[in-house]
Image 1 (cartoon, rainbow, N blue to C red):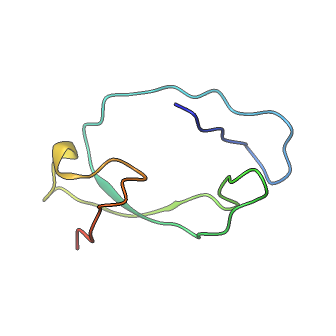
Image 2 (cartoon, rainbow, N blue to C red):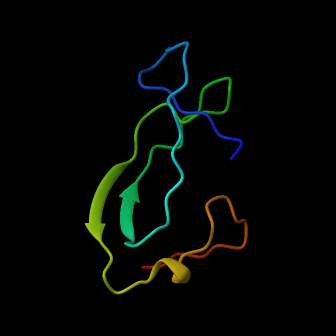
Amino acid sequence: MGRTFSATWGAKTALTVVLVVPELVVEVRADVSRDSADRWRHPVKPVRLRDDLAPADVPLFGDDTTTSLT
């Protein structure tokens, strides 16, 4: 996967990553602040369930060709 996640700011150990098959689409709000290891400094916050979208409708995270889905 190539990403690491930590439980708290400044944590030395990474969380275990479990890959899943997406079944729902949820809109989230994210702060773009990153630390020196390029990790997000703050957790994302759920905004709403997007039952108007299927997982296949959503571009992969980090895809530079993405556009707003609103």
